[in-house]
Length: 71
Image 1 (cartoon, rainbow, N blue to C red):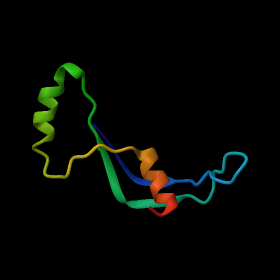
Image 2: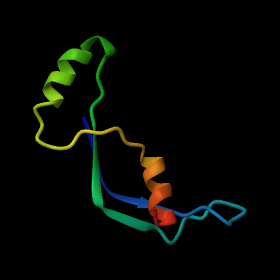
Image 3: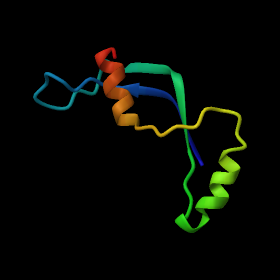
């Protein structure tokens, strides 16, 4: 299991090279990832369903694009 919090995104649009300053914080979310062997999928699913939070698929890349574009 990994937990990502205090995510920061950097807008790379309109630049010819990497821009490493002017980060934007996205403090409102955190991402919990569960990694398991495919053979353990049923067992992992059982345990994950016991966690009292909304479970959904997530892409930090897509979340960053949406956050930076204001959508």
